[in-house]
Length: 118
Image (cartoon, rainbow, N blue to C red; front, top):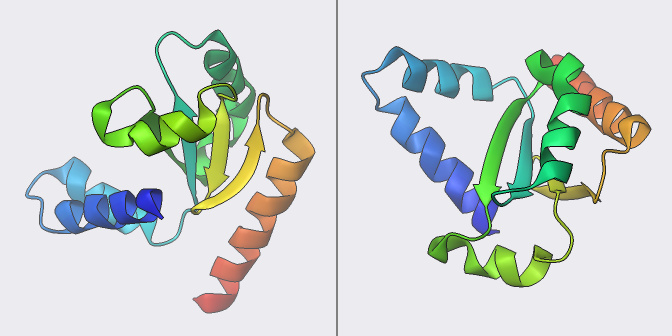
């Protein structure tokens, strides 16, 4: 729930942003799924996971959440022993490592839904 609030707040800020990046985030978010990575510094497994996802990076928006920040303490309590953890469009997807087949399947479903809604 907190991620959804954060994402909606980010989009609200981007929508009213005068910067090209802010406007790009807003327009891109309307048709690309959001992959949220719950992470901390350092996190070698997170770095490895991002490398595995590199070939797909144009198909989603990556949102990183540092669970060690005070405002993310609920995520820290939930995921401190499990990072990396991924949510796709606000729903839990996978943890510890990238399950590429599961990721591809869920990404494709979302892309098909988006194509059907346009």
